[in-house]
Image (tube, rainbow, N blue to C red; front, side, top):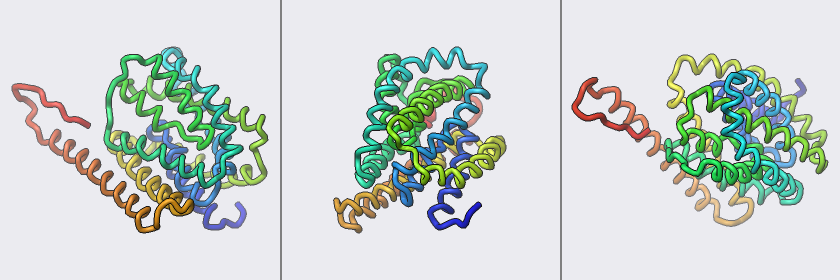
Length: 297
């Protein structure tokens, strides 16, 4: 591997952590990698490299969950129908919108989604087909501009109460479609560059190490606790990135922008405290009681 500068070292490190998370819970690679990597590289350079990596990751997820393919395909169809126009719009935005504004939009969109996941938001959707098409269009735009789609997809599928295999199968089908369409769209618009291919030298080894590492580690800890901690870390990083983007665009003074970041941290700490308090209360409840209690996780 060639000599690493600080940005490339950070990229390798965060890609390793993100790949481990993806190996453990089935998503999270881009949603953890992008907020950190955007501090050093522009969207237009980073996104094509991540799309190539994610195409391989998502193909592996679909293969490992092939037993759930038929059921997953039926649930994923409305989302897939919305993906194509969203990806085209997002790819055009990536090629025309300036990097600073795109970073600001990326962080501003991701922050509430990640905080909702960190808070364990659950609300099953009745009109799933209509919601799926709308989600697909939005996810297409988000993925084509940032290569992130895991948090909104996971939030919807978790809301619907899917069991683990069905969840991984559905999210795998959607993500293999979005990475394929986005890769084609990037090629059509000429977004691939030597700089993007250079980043693969640091991302690919991290992924090869991180994926099996995450699959191994998750055997020894509660998956929901692991997911909540990862989302909290993500929220802190996104909050910092949002503050930096706001300062760069001169929208707020630095002390106000960093105050916003501090507010994100405090809010997330409250969510974590509530989650662990609920788990502790559930663990200490007597095994028999007159009426069942519901712990909102």
